[in-house]
Amino acid sequence: MSDYVVGLTGGIGSGKSAVADAFATLGIDVVDTDALAHQLTAPGGAALPALAAAFGSAILDARGALDRAEMRRRVFADTDARRQLEGILHPMIRELSDSLCRRAQSPYVILAVPLLFESGAYRQRCDRILVVDCPESRQVSRVMSRNGFSAAQVQAIMDAQATRTQRLSIANDILLNDQGLPELNAKVERLHADYLARATQKGAVNG
Image (tube, rainbow, N blue to C red; front, side, top):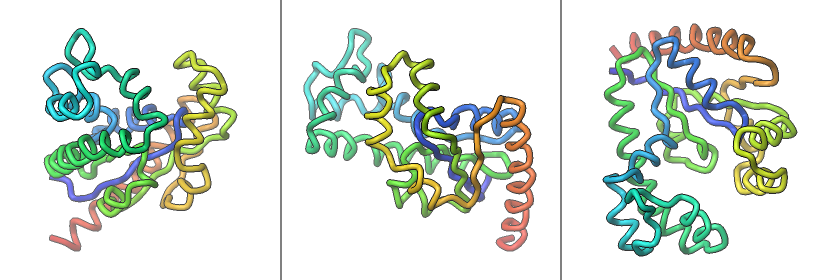
């Protein structure tokens, strides 16, 4: 069981997933809150009964999963609806991520949280925070290419997230993802060596 948690965050299009995958390739357990949200809202997901009770069955798609586009439409301009959604989902995600972090078998665990800056509860659980950073122009171009969004759509998403400056303000480590995959992997390997040493040191102190 790992008791050393590295929080991983970054804005949309920064390359968080590529960084998480690189740590996983090195044998590190990754707990991804976005993936947990998808799990909870997939067909048969634990969050669906409460969501359907709160918002009606129209938020479910033909497979019985959460219709994410419909849910986004409802909460986009309705603060109360967004708070209601978060009030249902966020405690379930936190409980599940806590359990998975406790059960992690690697020397340390990566806890990937897109909204880490906004969530004090998650930050308190982290021994160290790694922010994946890149120029905002690159974020926009990556998401446009990946998702087929317009520049205005990407900018609207970015405007709803913490700013680049805010994210960097909570960082213990910053991974600048402005080159290719080989450079990113090399940076992850250096961080991995550091985190292994820190996890070992914490284990020695606590043990």
